[in-house]
Image 1 (cartoon, each protein chain N blue to C red):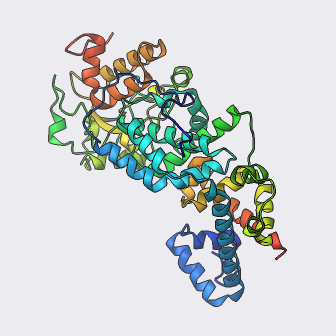
Image 2 (spheres, each protein chain N blue to C red):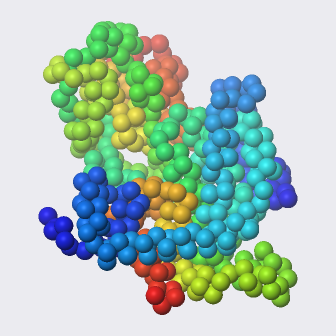
Image 3 (cartoon, one colour):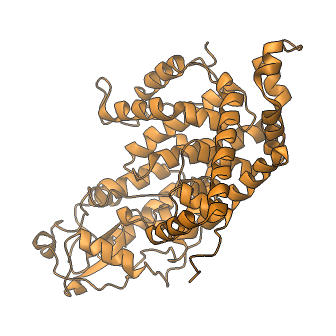
Length: 274
Length: 194
């Protein structure tokens, strides 16, 4: 650990001023600042430069800001129209790349893989009563919408259709797994009957975000993970053959995958695996 | 001022009646929420987008597109976590796209072009000459000499974004944000030879 007498770097002082230091580091910096005129002076200079920059930033740009009343009214009118498939326009592609490099770097720790019959390790317990019995029924087979609304990366159809996922490795960090099971009130050691699954599958852009993960009962005879995998494959095919929009596929998985299965397989009950 | 008309062809809205709305009634809660975010963030987003050197009209369009994308994002039940960061990310990428589409690759605010837009009179009045102090002019020169990514870091921070949000918008690591800001501020701080 650094001595309390060591001078602080500009970077550390800036993080201190911006509230971006851990509380432990904050108190160390505070102690040092109280004792050190040098660092206090540098901190003040930093703040002065920030103030100057902010003034220039505003003075050069504020004059160009048109009044907002017109644009606001226009937006309001547009919001009231049916939604446009905005996210799939080509102009969002740089966004997607930035997203992939930034956000996925974080997710990258866990290998994004999906579904397709592969199960994710689980250490969890005491399933909620409602989820425990699902024989031929749907209880527990659909996640709690409030906890698991489904989250997808804003990928384009062509990206989704050219992505490669390997099916054999998928590691969701233990901490995330635990969080998901806790969210669902499962904290014991009886989780053999549950597998962590993605609501919107990664092959359709689904993320490893906790809001896209839920403990799916694996022991259901009827609407189980294997059945959902079949649906995901089917939807992926349909999307890549331009039969349905990617956003439609994502929405249908996220809202009621069982209804989607019935719709796309023209059946009321899950079909036997091949 | 009416930089955008609903028929503006540069905003392509493929409206499809097949895409059902959850509610066709008067302003839904969702719409209210989005308008609330617009009121709160429009100026900040627009300032940021304008700092790319885009015109006000281009900037306004980008903001509209970003909020329409937000509507869709929310209708699809996607993550509502940090919508401010999400909006800046979308606006940032739309601005980049617009820049390349315009064949303009200005990474900095073009002072001259900006002067031309703000003050069409080629001979600035004494008031305008006084508008910026010598110190501010030097500061601007240093600012514009900064790498684009460093400038954007500063501007996003000036618009109130936390380091994590800035990292997400710019596709940088969290750790590199403080370094970039400190580096830029050190340069700006030396603008008057201090």
